[in-house]
Length: 157
Image 1 (cartoon, rainbow, N blue to C red):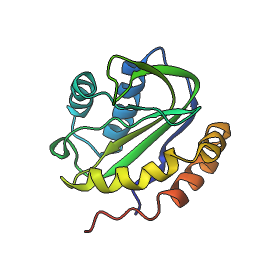
Image 2: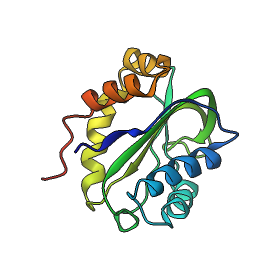
Image 3: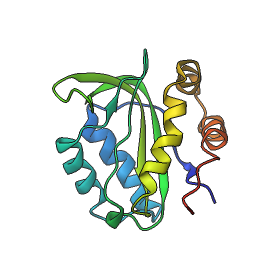
Image 4: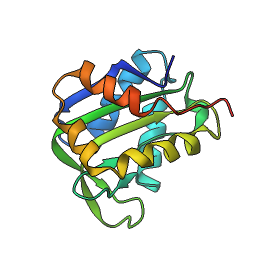
C-alpha cells in the first residue's frame, strides 16, 4: 500500500489557524492507526522550533512532521484549504505565509522523510499542478491525483 490513502485526503477544509489544522490531520492519522497518541504534540512542538511553511510561488504549502519515533506506520495526510491560513516560513522564520495546502508527513523510517521531501518538492515547484489540486472538490479525485504524483516514493532504500 502507498503512503497516501483516500481516507487521509481532505479537500477544501476550513480551519481557524495552523494549530487547528495540524491537530485535525494528526487526529486523522491517529484514528487510522498510523501514529502514536503524542504525535500531534510532537508535530506542534517541532512546528514552533522549525516552521514548515514553504513558499511555492502563488500557492504556499506546509509540510509538518515529527520524528519517526512517534509514527507506527508511514503515511501522508493532505488537506487543501478553502481559505489560506498562516504558517511561518521555514527559511525566514519571522515571516508568515498564507498556506493553501498542508501535507503532513508521518514517516516511520528515520531517514525516510528526506526521500519523501525530495519527491514532494517536484510537486511543490509545479504551480499549475498545485492550482489543479486546490481546485479539486472531491476527495477521491484529489486522492487519485496525489497517489499518481507520489507513486514514485519508496522508503525501502
